[in-house]
Image 1: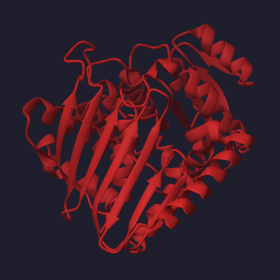
Image 2: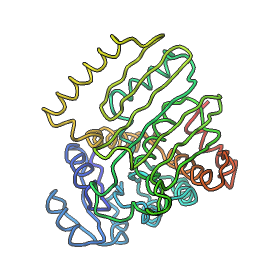
Image 3: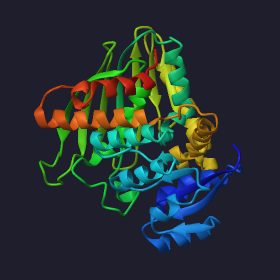
Length: 368
């Protein structure tokens, strides 16, 4: 990495606690500007992190030719316009999840990124937990045989403990909180591309809350394997649960993403297996608590993700989590909404206006 200049758009909590500290630990890059609709917040954040410039509007930012990378830490409702400005100005883009709040918007982002030959990387830092990386390697190396099914659980508290903003409480609600991370993990672990989606759930309070707060999602892949995703704001009032159980023809893995541990077994799972796994997990959590790393959670992995993205820019390689991944996640979420509304399975191809575009997207994610 050599002197890449970066501007951060959005001066909220995620920028201050994750993105900006990660950049500060990468000495060969420089954050030269902060942008926020609250100019006062932008100024305060710039001073706190020793950043030279601050703006209240992105129009001034994109005219700065020294900036090569725009880092978007804004709510998804306002990203499309900023991404268009950045891409048309030839600037690469790092963006928090979800890419957009609809497949239509994510396809617009995909097209403008491709048309302007810039790179976009989606923040999916749960992929960087060491246990998740090891599990994916075990699957790709054939230790589980062929994947038959996976079951993922993504329970989180209501967003009130993370932000005072009201934007998370729109009609799709929980689907755009932890569900994008859970769906991404299931897609990333499975070597086959998604074919069909079916979902049950909605508003468990029969319309009182007015947004989706729980869902059970079933996905079928092209090789016949299945994955289910159980996600909710209602089931876990004390914190996050993020687990994935993987079942193959030759073995099984129980992955606890949040606690960065996994148990692999072949044949019958014995009490000794479970006891050993529980002991190792307890020791790892205890060490994490004593060092403080446990409380950082996925924030601990922003540095590696950002470093990988910068390397991909400088080496002209595919970004670690490319725009195509964001589009497919949005397609799955849209398929969930459509399935909830119509009560039927939804084929992934029926969600896309162009089959050719879908094929191009999948070819990047699943090269032959």
